[in-house]
Length: 448
Ligand code: PMP
Image (cartoon, rainbow, N blue to C red):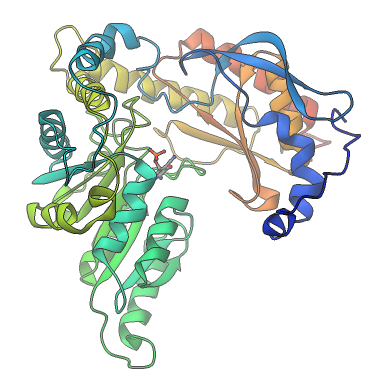
C-alpha cells in the first residue's frame, strides 16, 4: 500500500535492452517492495547499525532520503565472528599500520606488480589454517569461483553441481564449457546416481570417458542455512574418482571447534577435499577470496586463472586485516578471544534457531549454522515482514525470486558472535510480534 500509486516508467531508447528482465514480477511487484532493499546504512555492519530512512516521493514514487536515521538491531550482516563490533580493538591497528605503508590498490595483477610480502604471508597462513599445501588469494570471492572453475575444467569434462549452489559457482561452471549436471540439494545418494549414470554413458555423442569430473558443493548454503553432508559426499566423490570442490564462503571461521570450517565440523580430512575455496567477507570481516589445494594446483592457478592473471590484486591493506583476523581466530594474538568468538557464535545461532522453531515458524537449516532462514512463503509478505521489522528497529534481509522460488520467499537472519543474549531476546520478541501479525506461523489458525 505504501507504493500503491505507481507511475508508469518513461520509455527510453534502452527499454528493449531491459525487456527480458522487465517481466511481470519486476514490473508489478518489485517496484512495490523496492524500499526493503538497498537501504543505505551509515555505521559499521556490527550487531547494531544505523540505517537511513527513505520514503516515496509523493509525485514520482521514487525513493528519497527523509534525512532521518534509525538505529536497528542488525540480523542481516555476515558479521559472524563479530569483527565489525570491536574492529578498532581487534583489527584496527594493523590495518592502520598497513594503510600508512601500502597503497589501497596495487595497481596491477598478482602476476604483474601486485604481489607484496603481505599476499605471500596471507597465502601461507590460509593454507596452514585449512590444512592444505598452498593457497592463492583473489580480490573478490565471486571472482574466485567464477574464474577458478574454468581454469580447472573445460570441454570434455563433467561438473556435478549441487542444485542450490551460489551464483558465482554457476557462473564459473557455465564459463568453463564443461558439461554441467546438477544433483538434488545436499543429497549424497542423488549425487551417486548422477555420477553412476554419467560415467556409464560417457560423453555425449562419442560416449568416450570423461576427461575429469568435478563435484561442486558449499560448506553452508547461503540461502538455506544448511551444512554440507560432506562426509557422505566426499565418500561418493572418492568412489567415482571425481575431484571435490568445496566453497567455504560461509563456513570458514564459523564452523568447527576452531573455526576451520566444514571439514572440521564434519570430521572429514581436508586431504579428501581437493579444492577448498573460501571468502574473507563473512567471518573475517574483510574482502577477497582464496583457493587452497596442493602446490601443483595452486601453481597452475597462478599461471592460468584469469582471477589471478587479469584481475587487480587484493589490496595489501585488506591482506593486513585478514591476517589479523586469522591470528585472532587462531588465538595467536595476546588476549584475543578467537575461541570464545566461535563458541559464542554457535550458542547464539542454536539459541536463536530453537526459539524460532519453538514459536512455530518454518525455519530452514542446521544446528550450528549462523544462517537462519525463516519461510515467509508468499512473496507479498517480503515487504510486510521487512517493513514491520524495520518499524520496530530490526534490520533484516528478505529474499525472494529469483534467488528463491516464488513461493519460498524468506527472511534470512544472520546471527553473530557480537550479539548479546539480550539482543537476541529483543529481536525474537519483535520477530514473534511481526510473524503473528502477518500470519507466518504454521501451527496456528489463520496461517498463510
Ligand atoms: N560463494 C558463496 C557461497 C557466497 O555466498 C558468496 C557471497 N555471499 C560468494 C561465494 C561470493 O563471495 P564474495 O561476496 O566475498 O565475493
